[in-house]
Length: 579
Image (cartoon, rainbow, N blue to C red):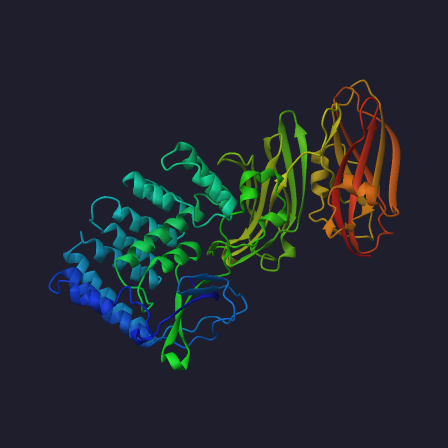
């Protein structure tokens, strides 16, 4: 896996004379081991390699910042995407690792049932990015119980075989003692305080706790379209790495401890290392470990986990603070917002969700072969409804069906060969209407084409793939009214464009709130209509001349007045970006 940019994690590595406690000394480990046993010989060789690597660390290209993002015990953690890429590992260190691996290979042939040898062999093969060889070594493991399964799952995850990795890790967990299984499944280090309070009310082994964990992992996935659950297997891979490091030294001079374990589980393990000068009076240096970047927020915040269908796009921001844990999916070196338009229509007890997208707006996707997915979930269980189109057009439309009601949508367009993703994720809800007979769909913007569409199917080829528009052309607006009298009834229809305004520092994003603070309405159309006959669904379309609008954000607001009920409304935000 090539690393373009990385985060930095620093730990002071001063001599013992500074008063720091040495938790694990590689030389001491090697000396205490039986030097005649295969594992003992392996430990001595490992201590020699780690000492050599530490003595030949390249110089870091940037130093510790004035302020840490996190201070965990002796560790300072910071995240800065603008830092230069890490220095290359010296060729002498690479060759020294290869020699050590060849020695581990020979030890594994003698002792395939030795836990330490099998674990370190897989660890250093993965460090050398020989993931296929790591999987072969894991399959050659003959240790009883669940240890070999962990090594196989770890290697499969690094190979991107997430479905298989998830299955192998699930099998390994069934072989563990209940206490160990509970520790492996625990999400305590990755969730915020509010979620943690809910989580702790559920005792270990309680089926409700298991369901809670499964639901969090379901929602935490970077791509809902991807089979398996790489977010979960990433965490299990980190747990596997902690066991490898518990049995052997890490590069940090003071050894692997609880501080390093916490940071590893929250942010991953370093893929590159460097040294930076420390306080000259301490006669020491600092070791900087660097993880893959960009890395995104791992688990959504508690208010999103509790009610995904009412979340908006800002709640799913990739760096939404506080960032408790991070994950850098290798298939998403770029992860940006998707240019799109969505709309939701009722079909009996089901919802028809429509997505029009434009991949060209994301430069990393432009002119690439892309796959497009519209994923819908009710948000209350680990299941969903998918529509995926491989080799999709750069500008296209997807539809998916789901139960009618509040939903969570994840629209995902990917360019796998470029490791690029554009995504839109937020809640969907039908326009607000309680205790009324006639209700509304969303508003769908389309490019006028000479005739007024009478069905959603007629709109699809002309649906706008964006909500950012120029004022130079007319804007088509399509909607549906539900529950209308099939014999025909009068309907007063008003379609207006209202500038989005700011009051007390908060953007008013709901049209019903905007009605209280309207500016002069630059665009307005009112008609007297009669509902469709022979059906309870009345599809309608109007065209608006928006040429008078200046740059800025607006709401297109629909109001329909039907006898016997209050006025019902639907709105859709637009942004005018030019004439």
